[in-house]
Length: 323
Image (cartoon, rainbow, N blue to C red; front, top):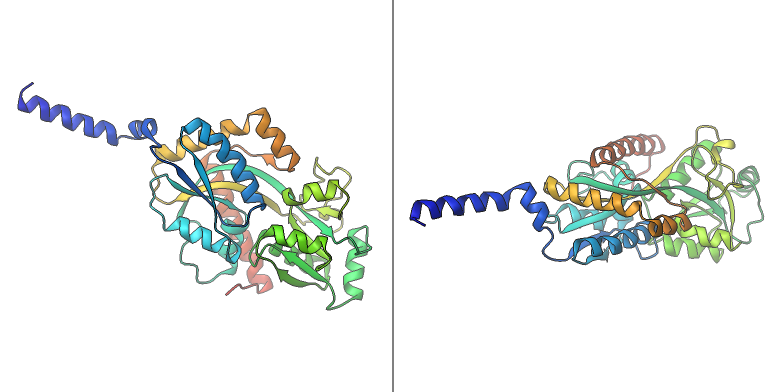
């Protein structure tokens, strides 16, 4: 092979290796890091670990969960936004970290929309309104009456300022007139513990961490936040039955830093969607009352931008600020 042919061959190989097809075929060559912007036991953590385990098998490289709780998801989100956009660092985001936070923080060091590329939805779930064991109410109407009769004495829990539980409760306050004080915890797992131990009286939080507690009869579920009753709790009313128009939906999904190669986004999206079709994954999500939500990156992006606009509006109306 003469020099000209060697150079031509080398150039062609380089171009091939740099092509999206070649990248998709060779990626990944090392472990992936999926940041979870919350504590273990949170909805992002539970669903993220479930899908990461499945993808580890499919990719031939471990997908490692890295819990980075703090500031309602801000810490983990900032770490992801500033990571190299090479497909090896992603975040298991949620409606709080990639929706609510855009409305309540004025000085984020990243843009919730511009600095991320939505990769794949995992699942959606209602928030559920639960009351502590010693709060002797059985319905939403009874709770509203109880809160109004005890001004300054009713506290509600959330997994942190800016979480979907925080904004869901503020929307409830706005629509019902109930008097409640926010007690933010460092993640939904300690918030759940706070309700179970009667440190706080109520929480409107993601359903997955509450499913087992509700089924065990440890707390009273007053309502779900979907527009209609949810199939996992058919006897539990929707809040909209008491407060027409009330609706909040929690979601969990994988996002990557902006600039991540499209070939990587496309591959991870396909693998997540495939995982969501597997009977064992469906069964596990069913126990969490989280409905599989396979989608395209584009459809996921639309959900993020829609959520951001909605929560910005509510935060402005209620003057909710985290900074």
